[in-house]
Amino acid sequence: MCPPRILKPDLKPVTVATLQEMKRRGEKIVVLTAYDALTAEMLDEVGIDVLLVGDSSGMVFAGYETTLPVEMEHMIYHIQAVRRGAKRALVVGDMPFLSYQPSLRDAIANAGKFLKAGAQAVKLEGGREVFEIAKALVGFGIPVMGHLGLTPQSINKFGGYRVRGRGKDEARELEDGALALQQAGCFSIVLEKVPYELARRITTRLQIPTIGIGAGPYCDGQVLVVDDMLGRFEKFVSRFVKRYAELAKITKEACARYRDDVKSGKFPTLEHSFSSKKK
Image 1 (spheres, rainbow, N blue to C red):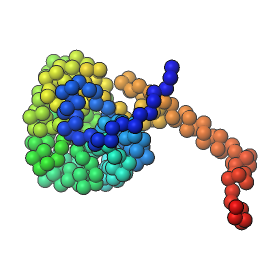
Image 2 (cartoon, one colour; image 1 turned 135 degrees about the horizontal axis):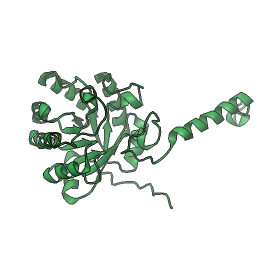
Image 3 (cartoon, helix red, strand yellow; image 1 turned 180 degrees about the vertical axis):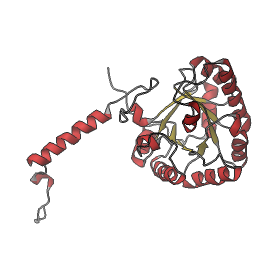
Image 4 (spheres, helix red, strand yellow; image 1 turned 90 degrees about the vertical axis):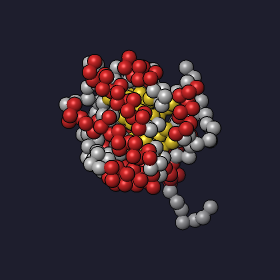
């Protein structure tokens, strides 16, 4: 099998309006997380449409067990770094736990900080319970991406990372929540770990794009945590993750070779050294 070509995409920036048009013409939206400038630059170069600066950074970057400890300053740091690397992709910042739930004032102020840091949109978790917050942010000119299904900031409420929406009542709640987020003015909605039948029904009913993660093939787009997709995160592998590389294994093997070369004196050699004589 030939490797895929690395294409230099059209440099026209991706906007919220771009995603709406992609849904209308049936073009899939490609989303990956990013937390640093180098990764953002590479993802941007190969044509990833949306870079989600996720609070998943708390787990894959900072080593927390959940996303709950992530603070605003952590997210702003990552957003600034990703913005420096991204030229074309739409940069969306994940608002962390308790940065928007306490009050509309908190939500507006913190979302504004994200946009000042370089994000072009923000993401909120929840359905009808965040309707007023999402509506207010959109009213102030802040684009909002919703997030339904398994919402990691509510992990203590759910008691684990289980599939959401299998029962009729829960499925109806998620479907109603999606319609509410659309009414609030959200430009898209992430559907995480929900049955594909439900994701397909919601996608068909909505005029705004759905971005699936563990929600089957019928969403308008897909997102994965880049460290999961590249095989860097090894603590666990969710069923919905497809590994496109095994970078943890490759990295450890390379570092072990470097260790052995330094210990044995094979590195550095004069080839990797400077002389007092100019050449």
